[in-house]
Image (cartoon, rainbow, N blue to C red; front, top):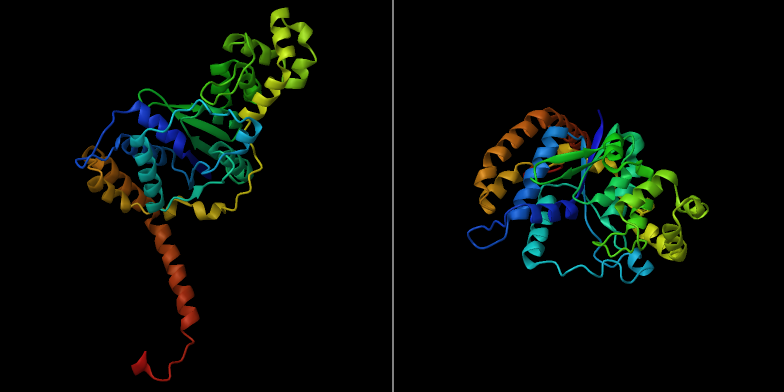
Length: 324
């Protein structure tokens, strides 16, 4: 089965940081989130065995959502110094492992993930998205599943369409409308006053989109109908803020994202560098598994490259071999 693993890097880092103990190395470097990220990365790769892998990164500039609403995410606290340090470490680890990254200034990682998954889903049997962010649940469909670590961190819930509907009580295609109704305090997205999770669930079961909802407010209790009527602009803006975009201009070719190009030997360096002695056995087993799986592929690729080089250079004649 041809499958792709997309990692919501920051979403996973945040989940690891707040779910795991705050570890430090002997020189005082914080490593708890680094430990959790590496542990989850290796576990998911080995268990789900993706043929392709990519990590998403966040924009370094404000996004289009800040243009829609200047207060978007304005309630977020400054990132803690310990977390900032670990974000930098993890991005460096991803680069050292030669895992390709997706990033586009002006867009959030969710939009980059949504665009990349949507663009490539026809060529895959399955796409797995590993994240700590529920916003990405709106991407779930027949091919795309979302994997979310819980508490404890190593417990993963896999959301396909069936699991999503069992959890929320409505289909995935109505999730954005649901979020627009209830709001999202973590992103400072306003909901409709007087509408909580239970009421929003009942509404989205009846109406598939904003237009059908607004056209049939007489079917709702008067108090709820009036609140929606008076806050139509808020509802539409909240919908646009919550909705993931699929039109980000990305230039990463999927063929550069093969898992076989991962530099797994670097993993053993991290055991010493970050003093991850408890991860040593897991890392060693992962490297052995990876090398056994890909050794023949890597040998074939290196042989092809050698033959290509040989064919190009074999016709070259040197006049004086002593000077070569």
